[in-house]
Length: 316
Image 1 (cartoon, one colour):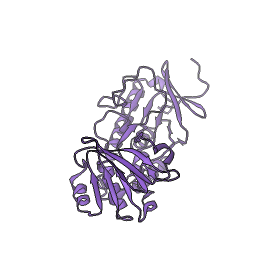
Image 2 (image 1 turned 120 degrees about the vertical axis):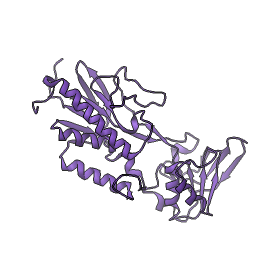
Image 3 (image 1 turned 30 degrees about the vertical axis):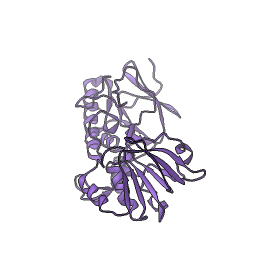
Image 4 (image 1 turned 90 degrees about the vertical axis):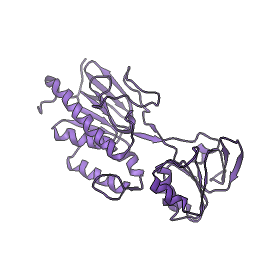
């Protein structure tokens, strides 16, 4: 197999906490790396107040990502804004194709994270951005003095409620489980808000409106009773799905949740291919855990490359 360009030692797909950390670790090993991403910061950028990242009692997600970027830029890491279409292994190298060009690498770390799940109900697709959003970070002021519904019951949903409460005093919550499932400290704050009405054991079955959201219809999953609510906004926070909208190497092991199977060292079942962060089957999806997994993936990639010393760049 002839390659017309010198392959990178490692290509990292994604630049959330896992991808950024992996990049920093690898460049400090004096490796030739490339990060491919459309979104520096990933889901961390969409977090509101982060209170569980070591070293910060509280920091907005956008500010934490800014710190990540500063760290990334301090090492002059090559970050290219391109969407990956496919990753294939050919002999000992990986062929990474984007919409613009083809890259080659001796190892790859997939750290593409997750993306918000949609409701998949009538009216949703046409009203995205017209009252339907999947984060409150930039959109809460849009709902000033307007009735809004938050769909979901986890930490992200409860943080959204707290953020929205700064702008409106009419908030509905549609939650499919018996009770809110996030941290108790957040749950206690929300249950004290008289203007927040919670519909547990419920789901959204339709979103109404032509050019903007005008209301929703919900259904109790136990009684099947339906109810219409007049709202002007819908914040959907029902979890995340692995961001794997590109062709993966043949034979790569994926679990039933469409997450990449990795071992404790972030190795996949394909030699030279590693994965880190929310895109993997690691149980807990947290910013700090993703960063740690990125470091592990980088160290594993470095170990793999060193085991093939004649195969790596002349920097060694």
